[in-house]
Length: 488
Image 1 (cartoon, one colour):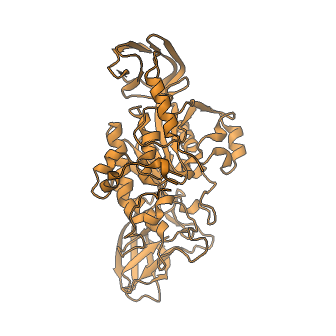
Image 2 (cartoon, helix red, strand yellow; image 1 turned 180 degrees about the vertical axis):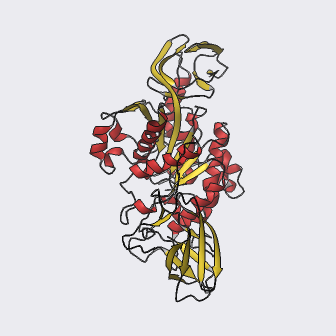
Image 3 (spheres, rainbow, N blue to C red; image 1 turned 90 degrees about the vertical axis):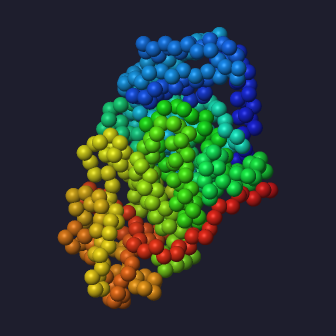
């Protein structure tokens, strides 16, 4: 079991703050990537009243520390490029070289974001072929904290080369590589994730207090030092692994998480948007781009009864909650039900995950001419015993990914709410669905299961249709709510 590190981290921060030397947060360093075309914040600590001077390119600013020894300067925006040198002078001198101006992305979530390149599909080949010195990653080391911290453990910005890339987050690397190949600007990846964590751990106390649903949980003092793998406690990961990064300039964030929240999927409809909104409020950069991965296919019941429409599916309900989060501005979702692994919660194909995130971003953030995602449910019309489903984002057209041309993954139900496997076909750019067992259909579902690998509806660009349901019938997670972790 990983022991809490908040006490050690806090002691280190106290030691830093009273040091006579000028110091900066650990993620400032040689090789870092600073966000282009935005004000650049540089900050740190020094003696009370000490004059600190920051020089970068043609810019120079001086500031005196406050009574708390903190200082911050705000440099004017700079265009993409580099390498440059950043110097900070006080009683001591600090110089960071090989600094690049580019686009910086926060890469966060649980184990599927944490998963390393070396463990991904064709990991050895990917490591050997890595030659992207302008794609760089800083990994925030695991830590938990009762209160917001001001620093993270020492690490470094590493370029994507064979010597380093094996321990990069696979999703972040493949995402960053795709962006770099298209944009040809430096890409900075701040990887801050922890396997098995729930979304509540990544939301700040302030965020919770602004929510009628969740604010009561913050009335209990954080007791993470007496909690059993404490990384599930509310706000504890935000405090230690997100708050210290503020207000480092970023382009946006990518997120791969939700497996640990599947049992409370209905509540995720509130908690996940709450987290995104909270981060945006904390960063004070407006509604910055936030793109996330929908859960892959997986037999979450481990063969003990299928998670599906008739039995109930926590993973399908979590995917639905993720899709509903698209109502927030400047968000996007990568659908990966076709590349999951039934018996492994960690699908090895992280290349396509990174690509699909990047395609969403390239289209919607950078206005590149491309199809960003697969078909998504738009509307249903019923005529007799048939339902006709319309889609958004069909790309250049709908296709069936099956050698025999059979469209699978669709179900239909009547008023009894019992679903039957349906026959389906593409008709004039829509999907016609029916079952001989349902004479008066009222609801259609597609890929509504924990293991949602059956569905084979794609667009011609090769991107899968997102799972959906047309009904709003009660789910198996509707009444399951968050409970604080149990103390020892």
